[in-house]
Length: 476
Image (cartoon, rainbow, N blue to C red):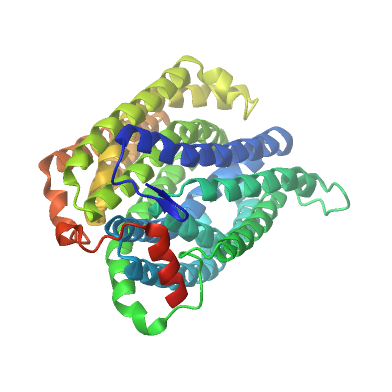
């Protein structure tokens, strides 16, 4: 059912819902990755290997901090989708208020901590001496964009929870387009702007994120959307914030654990020198493409599962899992075949150094062959998260990264005396993630952790979502 403010995903064709809902998110992911690729081309081809290495060592830190925001907004998505599916619109407004307070507060706090400890973190990662100074400068500027990025994460999760994945796409498109234009202008100092080199890419991100966030807020207020942030009703926030934290903290830990695992692995790679770091950075760009279908399918499946579980339609969740495996597994398998068959051609887009390309090819031959396991993991995790069992997916992530990937990467790289040992560890962790996630889904234990109980007989569900939303906005 389509309404002015979202889409009811509890009725209709499940494969059609998966495709139509995930497609805008997938396009948005490709847009972001396209910008990332363009940025890597500017940096790698025009600023050199050292600049690419500086971005590579900074990225895991940025991703770690982003993981906290993405985890909290995953809780927002779960609560919004379950409230929307059950038609509890007063509760939906409380989720919006609580999430807004939490997300912006976290964004400001983590920005301050990141600015303060950036040099110490980079030293702990064994950052090569010749890229340390530019890495610190780049990272500190990039971190200033955190509050704006967190705000965009929150609004995107709220919109997706109501079944609207198109609106975030439009504003993301504008943000990516603006960043793509600003990048070369600020890197090379065109049109009277200062020549900032590598730091220009960080400033471009900051400006575009700020403009996109302001524009999206204005748009939502103009439409009188129920998720448009407003001055929160603090007296009603306590229970909602506690519920958001109960789901969001494990999810944030999960996201951060993934990113911290990247920090540890990047540190191991850094120990093998600048060429290894640059090869890992270039090959990781291919990973981004391979992971996009899985990540976006996982988010779509989480929302579909959340709405259907909120409405008490448990039987539809089995169909969501089956179709998710078909779509996500099929797409990642195809990308895997391309990465393994044409690794050198793909890597040459980002870097021209033959030594870097040779090492990057070995990465894609090893890790690229296992992309499909990553794709299937996000299907089971999407349903488990949609039920609110984020503690479980956090536990499986801890197992994959900290029991398998990090220790195995350390041991194999030392035993082999070659960075390729890290590649084998990453591939092994994909397999472990898939096995543990699928096994837990098959056990059915995630059904016990539902955040909300479906209203008996659907009595609490209102037939007209637009009318209910309008009423709730008026009361707010």
